[in-house]
Amino acid sequence: MSDPQAAPPIRILVADDHPVVRDGLVAMLRTQPDFQVVAEAGDGRSAVEAAARTRPDLLLLDLEMPGLDGLGALQQLHAADPTLRVLVFTAFADDERVIRAVQSGVKGYVLKGAPRDELFHAIRVVSRGGSLLQPLIAARMLTRLRNDEALTERELAVLRLLARGLANKQIASELSITERTVKFHISAILSKLAAANRTDAVRIAVQRGLITLDGQV
Image (cartoon, rainbow, N blue to C red; front, side, top):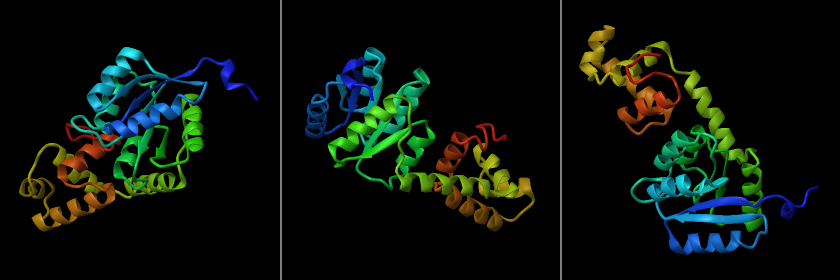
């Protein structure tokens, strides 16, 4: 087994909006000879700027931050550098944002309060290009995929029209169905995509490649 001190240190950017948590993380990471904290950020925008400036090997990212949140930062970061390795640091294992982060390319996550050895292990695994997802998240991802497959052709048709900004009455006219049926389909779509509203459903569907913004598949 190779000595971690023999390899170049893993350059880490820590992004968390709580100064006490961030300071504790940085102090803990600095106890490891193969870790090097190259920058800190207290919000998503600062994280994007720090990543561009320091080019870290790994970003330890909190999802709940003011202004530009972790998901928003993740989208900008991956647009600028798709190879950036990100480890989500979150307080909630069942947070919907964790699922969306994984769908956006995050390869692992660690719960706040996890033992330090677990955090250290996750950083080393993800920095090497590995993946570290707890069973709960893996199971939810599989369920999400099954739900996506369960979308009917009619539901996809409604989704396309939602993406075009059509109201229920217009969708009913386009598909020659009643408004009540449209509402039924939209309710099913929101449930299957775990979306909060129509706009969220369109965003999730586009993100997953089910439709495009012009309403086409």
